[in-house]
Amino acid sequence: MTGHAPQTLNHAAYPTFDSAATYRFYTELLGCPLVAAIRKEAVPSTGDATPFLHTFYALGSGECIAFFEVEGLERPASGDGIPSWIRHLALTMESEDAVVAAKERLEAAGVEVIGVVDHDGVWRSIYFFDPNGIRIELTHQTRELDERDAAEGRRLLEQWAAERGQSLAGADEQGG
Image (tube, rainbow, N blue to C red; front, top):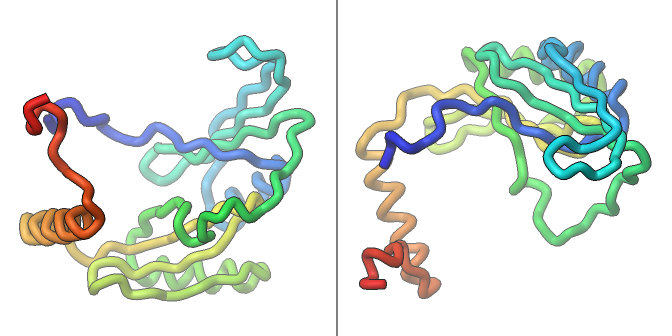
């Protein structure tokens, strides 16, 4: 099955309600260069007459974080019931020192930062929100995940699912 998995992330796209503030944040504070922008009067995939600007900021790997500013789109009211810590974009840093340096740089710019948080001795992370309300995690993974991690992950998933009456088996495994 792994031969069918996507190879890498090309980009993840999010809404922005201020492209200039997004530009400053991602280029100046995170060091992600603007590498492309597309401006259209209609959505290519749907044909909807919706003027937009689509901007792309590169990570060191070449993958991108992208944003859409859509003409006339208002920022939605917060409070959809999903806790703010769930939806986030985790970005890899080269070292724990780089995580700490980013924390200092962000705080000096007035950004509220949580952490450095230790996640089970595997990840050391900081958390903050960008100007669009997107929660960002900058993390350094201290070791490679191995078969033991996968086995423990499967055990925890099976336990969680069983407690909730959920099944991990696909239709073909269930005789359907």
